[in-house]
Image 1 (cartoon, rainbow, N blue to C red):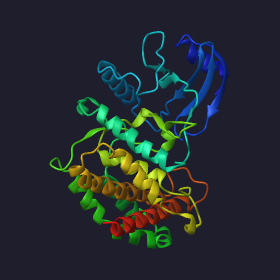
Image 2: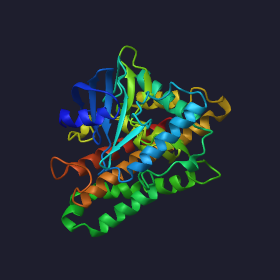
Image 3: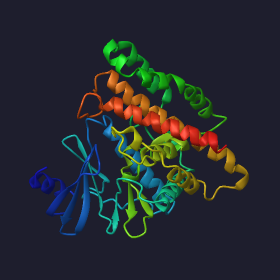
Image 4: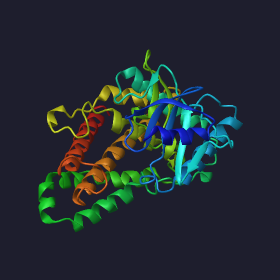
Length: 346
């Protein structure tokens, strides 16, 4: 990214770039902290190769901000800078840009560093669900079709399995067996999404801790950010994804199986935070719903990693040939550990 390009973008916001630095915590969009004549801002370029329907991102975030503003909820999202034309987003040569206020004394953690932060993350997700509970989800568009659809992900896996050569299949036979052993989660998922069991709500859909702004002093989650995947979903999607991404004590590509450990304390804290204001008579059933959701999200991610390995590593970036198989194995280790924990505590 050249300064001259940022100058051109910021001109359309009536801002002048003084200095900038790249923020590397995200994997998809290009994000920069930019010092301007009016103070620091975060400038983000939406990746058109990942988000094929970037116009839907614009539509959904505009609808969310309009809903919150009309209900006088003005401090839940990071303030957005409007263009000189009064738009929340800039579309420049087909590329979508977003400019938001840089929030001092807040940061995006790479890992959940304390039980308090885990509790705070669960509570912030519940706040998001509560604030948007009255919104008409039908006005929000699907950013990535079938993103958290377990049936779709399993069909992708089956297609990849049937097409893969025998050498690849033989190298992951144990993983294939575990995928089969946990296939009961597909039926569990189909029961959970029945209209008489749950309803679709507005979800963030990518609730890892790095998609938050967290207080550097207290560890409290203050904002959910990276709103590119907000779309209709289920509460267990957001909590399950927070658990999947946040409750492992190791990197998702860890090669030493002894270091792949599911952190039960962080898990309990995320669910406790989400359910903190729940009525006691509903608590057990709703907690069970979220627990099953966490199992489902771990299983779904294992499917996605294994599918990519069988396909020849065409989706996730890899540094070596077996990395997606290692990632799938680690998700299955975490899945087994969480499943054992839930069996022991019920």
